[in-house]
Image (cartoon, rainbow, N blue to C red; front, side):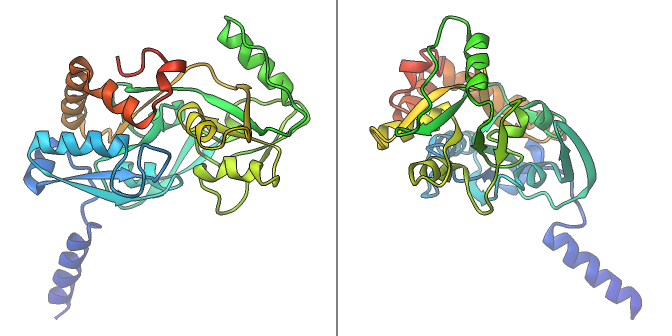
Amino acid sequence: MSRMFLFIIINLLVGLGFADNSSADLAQIRESGVLRHLGVPYSNFVSGDGDGLDVDILKMYASDLGVRYQHVPTSWQTVVGDLSGKKFLLKGETVEIIGEVPIKGDIIGNGFTILPWRRELINFSIPYFPSAVWVLAASGSSLNPIKPGNDPAGDVALTKELLIGKHILGIKDTCLDPAFYDLKGATAQYREGLQLNDLPGAIMKGDYEITMQDAPDALLVLANNPGKIKVLGPITEHQFMAFGISKDSPELLESFDQFLTKLKDSGKLRELIVKYYPRILDYFPNAGN
């Protein structure tokens, strides 16, 4: 009886995905017939309504593979673990592995910035979208934007100087976490339950004075809220976004990189980027090339 009970439990665990926590590589994805997209609703990358830049790209890739596309809901706090199967703690920019969690998807796509600590846990596709982190304030703020020059590093230094003695709102353990940007003399602020898309609204309501935003999303915020937001300056030089793929899925990484390259060469990637971010070429003229 005990052996039969053990057999039943093992089969239940396999069915729930706990017995084998290995990542799916290209052959397994083709065999399963589905590409699982880990996508946090964010800006125009993943709208939450079944479309978005990253959604469109991955639907095209799934079609190219001859498999079904599936969106797997996740969060900024769990998305890396949902792909890597690793439970971890961030200490500054150092990653400490403290256990395992179930793997829930095959590829991350939600305007995912390439960051050093993330590279310790997952691989990235070739970059497909330019970005930077900008500091935003409500239009009524007494702080004035920097005067940008021809030196990106100098612009970052001027912005950081502007923030000395200030409190800046962000989201912990994301690319919009002030703790990652060596803001000496500035204090990071966090509020439970806020999502990345909520940050500009918090300063427009007057709850906070300053926040941060990826450049692509900041452009949408400026367009949708004319006269209510101003960009104080950058706190990073140019960054790049890419898709996240498990370190255990080298064939998937190679295949997807080839697909993205063809998308770039055909001009389709640039067309999609402009569709979802109409003003992007004003600030990043090489986007999609």
